[in-house]
Structure formats: C-alpha cells, structure tokens
Image 1 (cartoon, rainbow, N blue to C red):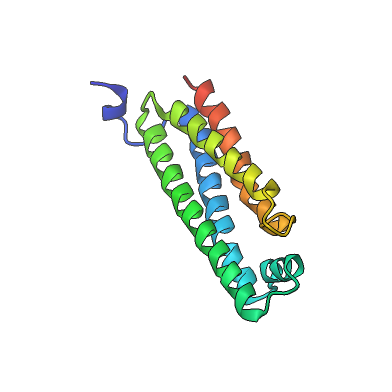
Image 2: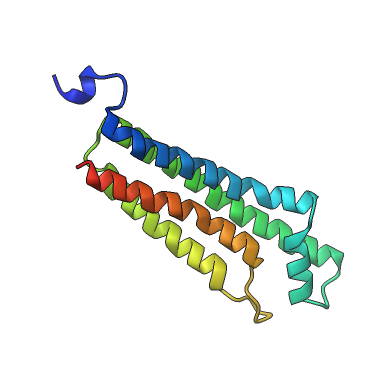
Length: 153
C-alpha cells in the first residue's frame, strides 16, 4: 500500500508546510473580512476614494467602496478555495502540490502588486495603501509554504 493510504495523520515533515498553509488561509480570511470591518468602523477606504475624487458625493463614494468590496471578496473567496485545495493536496501527499502552491503564489503576488500600484482615473492608487498591503500578507505565508513543500520533495 502506498504511504498516503496507510497513514491518517500527516508525517512530521508535512506539519510545517500544513502550518504555513493554515496561516495563509487565516491571513486570506483576514484580508477578505477586514475591508468590511473598515467600512463599518474607520472608513479608510471611503476616505481614500473621497480624497481621490473630491467631486464625488456620498452616493458615488459608497458605490466605489461597494465595488472594491465586491472585488476584494471575489479575490478572497478564490484565495480561500486555493488554500484549501493546496492544503488537501499537501496533506494527501500529491506530487503536484508544490506546483499548485507555486502557481498560486505567482497569482497572489501579481494581485498584490496590482492592488498596491494600479492607479485609477484620478491618478492615485485605486485601493487604499493599507488595504493593499493587507492583500500582500498572505503572500508571505505562500512563500513559506512553497519553500516547505519543495523541501519535502
């Protein structure tokens, strides 16, 4: 029988990678949920949009914030699904898990760079920088995950 069929718990060499995967999942959930907390409390994103577009009234700022929340939620849900797929593959000892993790990291880095640098029609970065950096946090766990998954091969 293969090792993946005879063991129910991950081997010790898998624990660190699975820990990094869980950390990435938690950071992704945080990066997805926090913009909603911001909307209900500090209004950082709304202030950023209002500063970028001084002519916008409350309705336009609210519409822009809603659009950003939809985008961030979509990316967050995709991120959570990716973490779960890669974690399942790593736990099962699938040979493609390191490749999937590396591909996911590349996509996440591209998204994070875009969130931090893409300017909108006002000439300012579209997403508030603090929220852009929050989008980059899961990439740290992703980089650790990729290294650990490749090392265990």
